[in-house]
Length: 586
Image 1 (cartoon, one colour):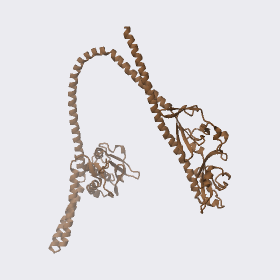
Image 2 (cartoon, helix red, strand yellow):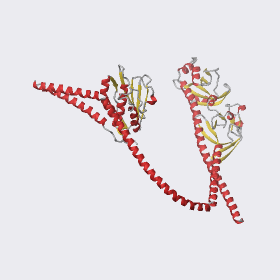
Image 3 (cartoon, rainbow, N blue to C red):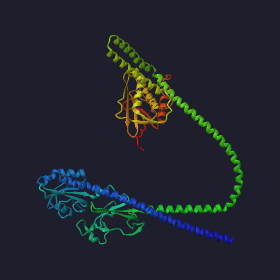
Image 4 (tube, rainbow, N blue to C red):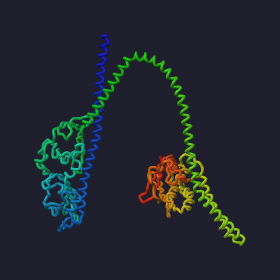
């Protein structure tokens, strides 16, 4: 008994050590992976902040170059005045100051304040050499940190005769991103922080000798302070700072740098790595909990092995009984599945019959117009035939030939009408295919021409500039178009001027819109419900199934159909269809 207890204690201790080692490994791996991800995101954030700073400064750099070519610059250097031009430019661009100077550094025109003499800046000296100069410093003149872009002004003969200086307020640029994460700061060649989204970092020097950092005239000695105390170490190949920087700086942070030679600064970021520790801790805890749970389950499984063996023997008998019951249930389910399939087949046939009935109903409604469309050519054929016979008797075969040509054209017209009607009346069971949309609309308009003529309705359709093919069934698409055109004509019943407009737009999908100028739709949300109709109750065309059938047909194409009131009056129905893929398109 004691031996078994000792073995269990040893086993528990070994398992606890294994769990601890596993959790430590998971924590280390998760923390390193998290630090890598934070470093990658930090580099992206630092690059974004750097691009943001340089792009805003670049606009003022370009402004200096543009003012050089402005007529006011030549006028000022020639002894004239600038008037309010520089002030207006400064107000519109947000520049702190714009000044035009002579080669001795004397400012002869300024946008704001008083003119001074300043030829000691390196940027000004660079401009006197014919290049674009840039300075960053704390300006006693303005009492703030500034960037100054100085562009040389060349005379027409060549030498430099002056300079244009554009002064930028750094605090104005910082205002829009102060407090953003991560903490970002930009240091100069003297390791002094000049720009930052944390105000407590500005004018802090990372140089060990602060006096060397303030030996230039760019800062006042009282402005420069030591950087916060920090210690560096390496984690997963990344530099990490342990910094005592107050509540707004992370105590443990990745240090990332990015040189910015265009503005003479180095971008630096401090990315808090506490989220990586938290996630790694959660991962380690989850792994330990999972292993502990697995161990507990394994231990319980061992204890219950004998009990389960006995229970299994009992279950085997019950399984045999339940197997017989399940086989009977499976047989019933197979019968039910077969019945459902039969019901679905009947429903599909009923839907097809309903669609066919809708097409035949439409043909029935158009029968009077169709007979008129066929009767006119027949009467004309009879008249042309009698005239041809008369011309032949009079010895005028060329006149008879003209009448025969007209008879042939009328016969082709009748054949085309009958062909469209036969194609429309047949029951289409073909799968989706590439359908020429323009041809489908033209065929539909020929079938609807009789009704439009009878109702004195004008159908506006300008055709397509180029062929457009869509995924649909040709006959079913014509049925939808014919139903919408017929409804548009019926919606204007009683109006003297009836107009139907058809437009096609080819964007991400092909959209066909059919608009009428009737009274509009009272309940747009119900127009596609079965048996919903705005026509007179009891009328042959008022059963309310046309739009419901059209909705189902468009859905079967993978498209969409919508109806709404047009802002200028009337109703507009739109059909959205997928465009056919071009050859070679995936």
